[in-house]
Every structure is written in C-alpha cells, then in structure tokens.
Length: 442
Image 1 (cartoon, helix red, strand yellow):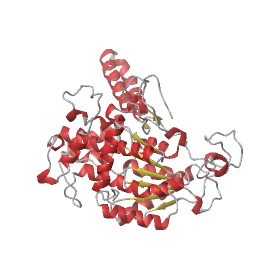
Image 2: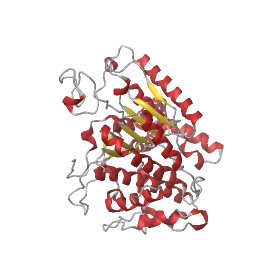
Image 3: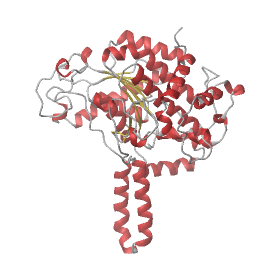
Image 4: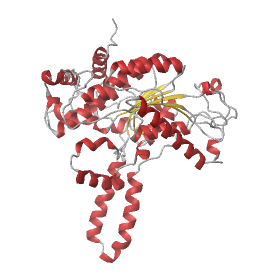
C-alpha cells in the first residue's frame, strides 16, 4: 500500500502549457523585435512539446522480460512463475491472449486506447452506441494498429507480440440504457471466458440540463457517465476476479467542481468533517425527472453544467474506490489532461468559436493519441502501481483509496482533491447507484 509523508508538486501538462504561453507573452514584449523571428518558432515547438504531456512507457509482461518489464530477468517467464494472469508471447493461442473492453471507442481517448492495446497483443472489444458504429470503428482501429505494427517492423519491442491484431466490434451498448448494458454483458460472457482490463472511458458533457431518454428520471451526466459504467463493472466483477483483471476509470480534474455548490465560497477549504451525505442528497435531488428535479445541481448556467459533469467524474472515482476496497480488484481513476476532443462541441454554438478552439487545441491541448497515454499506462502497468494509497498522516482521513493517475504517474496524494478521499460518501453513493440500476441485494 503506497503512502506518502510529504506533498510533492502534481504536474499537469495543461499547467505547463499555460506557464509556457505566459512566459512567451512576457518575452515578446521584452525582447527586441529582431529576436522575434527566432523566438516565435522556438516557442511554437516548445509549446507543442509541453502540451503533449507524458508518454506511456508501460507494457504488459512478455516472454524474456522480468515481472516489471526489464530486460535482465530470467528468460521464458511463465504466468505461474511470476504470479501473473498472462504473459504475452509470439505463439500464444488466441484464447490465452488478454482481453480488454474499452467503452466509447468511436473517437478521442477511447479510440487510441483501443489502438494501443491492440498493438500490444490484447484482444480488444470496442463498444459504441449502435452495431454499425461498433463494427466500423473496430475495422478502423484494427487497420490503425496493423499500420503501426508495420511501421515498427523489425523492432525488438514487438518480437514477442502475437502477429495478428484482434479487435472485436460485434457488441454495442448505450450507457444510459441499462437493458443495453445487461445485454452486452450477457453477450460478452457467452463469447469470452476472461477479462483482463475494463476501461470505462465512455462519457459526455452537455451545456443544457438534460435527462436520459431511456430513463427519464435520470439526469444525463449521472446516467451516462456514472450509472451505466457502474452497472457494467458490477456485472463483470466475478469475471474480473477470476481473471485477475483490473478496472480503469477515465475521470477528470473536474472532480473538484462539486465543491463550488456544496461549500459557501469558491476558494473555501472543504469541511474536514466530510460530506456526510450532502453530495448524495444533491445527486438524488437532480435525478427526479425534468419536472421533479431540485437542488443545487439544477441551475441552468454554464458553470453548473461543469459542476454536473464534474460530479459524475467524482462519482467515477468513488466507484473505483469501492471496487478496490470491497471487491479487492485492482482499480484506478485518472485525469487524461486537457484533450482536444469533440467533447466540448456542445459548449460552443458559434462556428467561429469552434474554429478558434480547433486552432488553439494544436498548441495548448493534447491530441487524441496523447490524451490516451495515461489510460494506456493504467491499463498495462504493473499491478503494484494500483495498490491502495494511504492518506497523509496530517489529514483527518484514515481509509486508503484507489490510486488516481495524472501524466502516467500516481498522483493520488498530489492531485486527488479532498472530496475524492471521502470513502464513506463514496460507499453511500455507490449503494444508491446500485439500487437505481437494479443491482441492490434483495
């Protein structure tokens, strides 16, 4: 169990990009104009390098490597010898290859997470909202993974990876349609006998207050970003346990936003007494349908839209805690960084604003592939990195939590905000979520 006695600086690529831009703006006013012809190109290159963030270096265990992926270990490592669920080898049977489910794979982080896992020899099951989209997306992911492999032909890193790329697009699910989630699980378990990685990536954000068309009483962020993934994960828990699998939640630094409506004053430090059901009450109040919803999350402002989104991301972190603490399955959540995806399209109604955003993304935000790096790290890193994290001794928290990753590193101590450590509130909300999707024990 990881512990830490001192706070370290939690680096995020978006902070680096802002600092670099600020430094450039100041220097442009200070430097003589004759230097600008050199300074501007240098700044553009530096800005892009900083914005891209950290690169994933984790890979699954292969034959001829040590448990931690080094080159100096004993050759011909077997899963039994190193207590792993699998070891990738060139000649392994298809049924022996690790299986990964990635939700929301049609674009963005999910797409490149699926590509990265397929390149490494995983059997990747990609999911989209309908069968046609799942099948076409799987074909694109397969082609991109094969092209990447061909581009690295002869690279020793891939000498022990199975030659064929396997991407399955036969299944689909819509996260706020709980019958769709249950159907997916039934079909998946009828086809696959193992599950090594579940990446809960699918998510959305809406500027307006909207409710699920499948479950009209449920606010859309809650249904799509939290309840659907919760149901999917809980139904797959037995298979994950048998397979020694792991759960990865793509969360966000936006998990800080619920504090804006639950604590008076934007910069006030959250109460040390904990939430004591206040967040659960707010979540219950908003999930009463369009006519019956009330509470602090109902405000129809852009700021409250971010709060509703951030709340759903905090609930993802809570479920990762629950999975790790109660089901004893390695689980984590992560902040992928600020990524230039289609995610924010609903927030920018004007075309010229969207165009500015697209150009700004090239300099200040991560690309889709760069945004997938921390997710890939969490999916393939040594299980030791996913151990529970103890809180600092000087805090009033005593219970360990699942790790929270930023820039391909465990930044639980540095970057998980106080609400994220409240395991009592986490358990209350997860139990409420189970009841909402029909999974509560009788």
